[in-house]
Amino acid sequence: MYSISNVSSARPPRTTARPVEHPFTDDRTGRARIRDAAIQLVADSGPSAWSARGVARAAGVSPGLVIHHYGSMDALRAACDEHVVARIREKAEAASATGAPVDVLSVLREDDGGLLAGYLAAVLAESSPAVARLVDDLVADAERYLLHGAASGRLRPTDDLRGRAVVLTLWSLGALVMKEHVKRLLGADLTAAGTGTEAIAAYVRPVSDIYAHGLFSEAFASTTRAVLEEESP
Image (cartoon, rainbow, N blue to C red; front, side):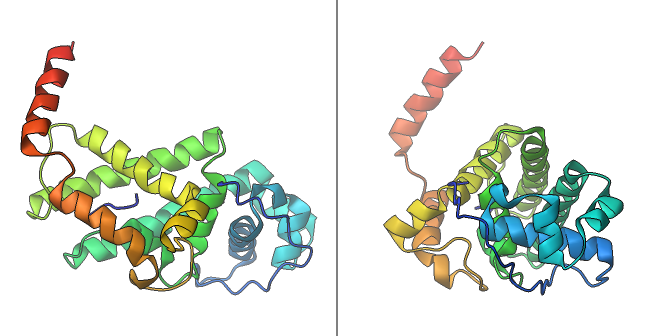
């Protein structure tokens, strides 16, 4: 299921960036190293660490080289967002191809040390065109996963595919933004490195129960649907 679904994890910027050893890319070009270092920096220290100097220090290059490769910090930010969305899409499609339910929170934590989840958790609370584009891309992907799931018989079809994709995406991304409270209340670390759902089982269990069994009784659901239909223009 698409159970993805900045608590301002505003930790102060690190004075010494940790070594960049990213599994994100195989080409390891200078441009890719800078992009991956920027993703790592934001995941570790939040958007407040975002600067040409900070990215350069994390990547082990000069600030001038950062601008040389990307032209501007806005262009670098767009490249980071596009790469994160592409990686999520790649992992989710691989999971979907096996017939497994797409649990994007688990997808985010697989073999990248939790960087995808950490990056998203850091930037999602920003109100900016960049974040809007990122969320729009994730919603569009969610629509495709929902269609595929309905066609395969794993998910119930809906007359409001767009609405379902938006709500499920925002619920899951909201959990990332509130990750510190998820950890405090359930003991589940949504951005911890690891594979599978063991580390976040305390979160996944109630989510799966709600998705599988629903929350409303049939009588109450019928009443709610009737009221909504009456109020629809």
